Image: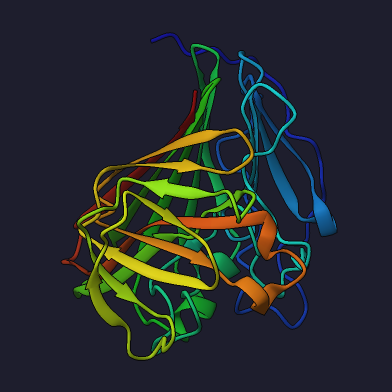
Length: 312
């Protein structure tokens, strides 16, 4: 496949490498090998002056991702309609994770010994590489351990997050490598928020899965089995689907069907907060690819999982 690029210099955005009082979190915003312009890849200033990457495909689709949290916040498939959702209470200030889009849960999914969903969504990722493959922009972000992560999880690691935008799809590939001299284990998820009409949204493909339902007691999930062909969101929903299939289909209730494919994300999670977020719960559903069980990595071992979102 042909790779198209053309020389240019990254815009001078003058981001501070370290913020006073945030030295354990801020890794600095490094542009690494992006000393050239890659067709369809643009670095700009986003909300709250956070650095943002805009991807544009030859077919007219567009995606946006923030280096803070390595978070994809927008995906428009060759029209102006965003298929992802960012909550109206989201803040862009380096102090809290971005609430919406495709946040990372790593190295912990949900509550546990460290903060909710781990630290990857609270740290600055850097741009490791970019390319354009036959009109489709590709960018790879990198996250490494630092004082902020080690205060919670004392291991050396590398996380690579590749994002590939096509005309009708967006794909991600997450690779975790143990760069320490001792083994570690982790859980992970992509906490994807989809724009939806909650009363009309449904997910097809989960029938027969073993479930862990966190409603009504999130600390003691009820085991069960999904019997429905189409899972809907009639109220508060927080349910894990173990050994989920590699393909499910989301009808977002707005006229779109999104196919969600995965490789090596063994589980799925459906979530909608209902009246806990009265201002916006009607406008989104979360369909998350997850690895609920612990992944164990020996030194120098890697684990990779892929997600592919597409629309007809």
